[in-house]
Image 1 (tube, rainbow, N blue to C red):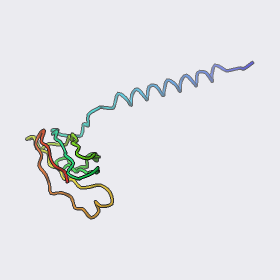
Image 2 (cartoon, rainbow, N blue to C red):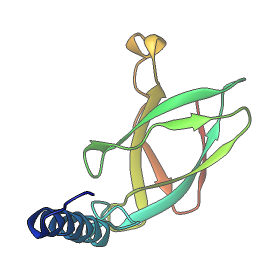
Image 3 (tube, helix red, strand yellow):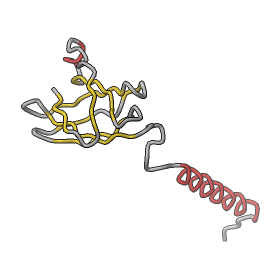
Image 4 (cartoon, one colour):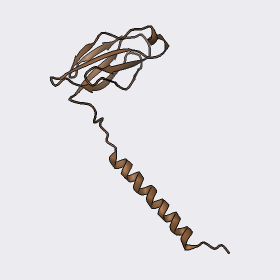
Length: 120
């Protein structure tokens, strides 16, 4: 015969309730959109290399790095970055990894809404 005190059962239930409340609160605080992007501009980056490559992007309008883009061969990837209030994004990019130490950043590139830009 196993004896379980009411106190042990109450502690277990309290822990379950706390975990559920904090999990729900954490999920409600999440948003699918990046709220730090000001005046978002959607544009398309086109792989200009022969094979697969990963690119580092820097947003000059928001002064921050954007998510690295992993391109497959001949792939286009949608990018959303900060705008300047007139529908223009200002970005620069370079290859990620060991070669990027010697590869300089690209010149600053102004990109319009829905524009396709060759990245190489």
